[in-house]
Length: 394
Image 1 (cartoon, rainbow, N blue to C red):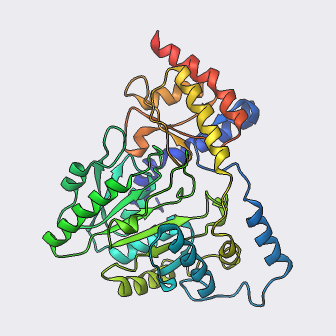
Image 2 (cartoon, rainbow, N blue to C red; image 1 turned 90 degrees about the vertical axis):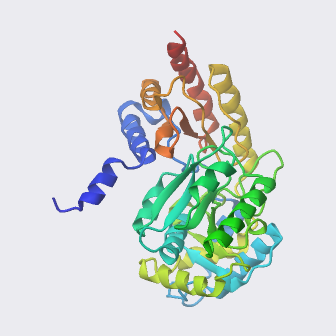
Image 3 (cartoon, one colour; image 1 turned 90 degrees about the horizontal axis):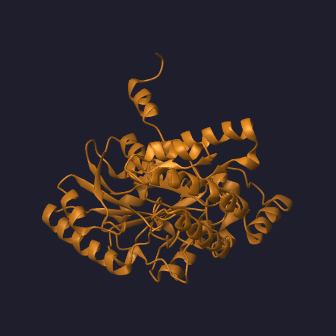
């Protein structure tokens, strides 16, 4: 076979998210899109906000000279300055524009950072349930993923993290608001984690970097605000994208921001810029760097996602499913009636409902539902959920 055995194995164990998304496309062709309720992929249905549309239109109508040429591998200096200015105000933390690296989305940023940090067999701690691609990103750079279980309510479990962090740990990945649970880590828990890592750094005489993966940082509900991880731990890199907050998932535009207090900040910055180039990204998309620069404050209307959440939560409760109401992002992570989440997903498919087994996120006995869809799709699915749950009751 032409492909590597390793990739063959990875593809076999590949992402449940994509598998279900592809199954949804097959169903839509077979029975019609209006009869299929697809909650598999976090692919936002909302269009980019007017500010974003206007910014893009202005660039296309009045393109600056050389807009499509190469630039510094880290991105345009004025774009990095705009990002730093926004983040400083939002996190109440000083940031140097030189410590902003524009990237091909959050996935690109994570690969750049991991490439810069990891030697073979270095360990990266992730919190279960976790975004499935973390496993592949870490393996890309010859690292080992170590799983720390979350608490029952999906909050940080400091005892589990303490157990997981050892002499080979280079980084801890946080994802808040979390995919798949929608939980947002509190300022208190983040501070406790910072204290724990400070003790581990002293014990092992090396920095341990928090990689805070925050693509949903603006999608937060009920008047809450996402606490700044920069304030919890000096050795931190914030990673985000505009896939969700500006509805630009297909444009692959994001950035990484190094804390101005990271002890290896200068060499880390240079290594990340180097890795952005040698991984083949070269630089983030030129057009969309310029397009997002003036709209850092903008976002899709979060109140619409909150309304979808509230309607979906009420309907699933009425159907008899148990879950923790998400504080952010656009996912629900209900418990399944028994531990066989794959079987439950298969039963939902009989109602043309597409969900993703929690097994793919490192937590059996759950399903992930992505509600970045239309209200009609949410409401239309609820009778099917009820029928499936009733089957299990009888």
